[in-house]
Length: 306
Ligand SMILES: [Zn+2]
Image (cartoon, rainbow, N blue to C red; front, side, top):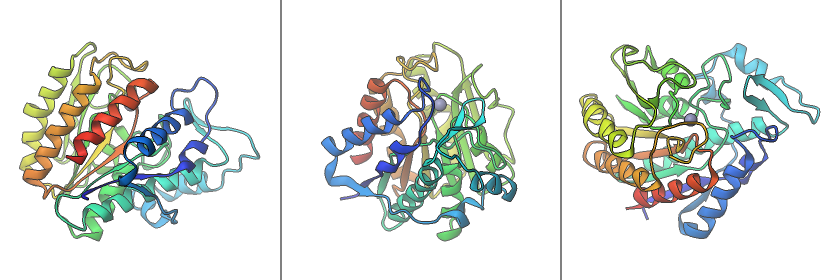
């Protein structure tokens, strides 16, 4: 068996206000999905203290702020749409532990792959602040960890969430060994991700317009992004897998279908198998229509298992 899903029920306990799109039900429905459909592949995340790894991306001022928060049973608002509840810190730490354990798993042997079914998401969290539902920059922390722990030369994060991963980009923009590539609807939150933002030649941004269909979305990855990723010779791929470009998602107007996510994942898997010894870790970012999220994640996992 060459595939594992890293999961934990603590993610259900990161609480946000009623009506917030990034809610516990997202993980409740996905935990039901994976237990019902993918039980042989499940690996419960071990709760470890990942602070030494979080510190590689986030600065001490921000971490002092987050680690000193006292909720007293109430919700604390960190920015316009990011909230902190009693179990938010342990959930955010467990998401980091999840990607670390997934990376350790895929680096064991060629062609091993993993999916981290976690929340809160990570790609908007910047080195010095929480942002856009995100507390810690999970994919960036994982990439940095992989680079150092396994003495790799290049790790790439591929972000197909409908929003630009400003946090991952910010963590990477002066790090030539870390590659970040993103498709994202523009204009849309957070407003970054213009194609002129290239870091030190390691950032690839392909903004796309509203109403783009699945075929065009996938073609951007096929013809504009993956050939440029190949030039960097990454030894590990991390996918920031947000499913909020789905046609039924309330936060965007791109028209991906669940099938399109299967096709896109198949293409990335093929790329990883050809160019990165098959090493691939995917971590959940967005996706806010529960039916669309459920179906898209199922197709995504189906494609990762093959
Ligand atoms: Zn998103």
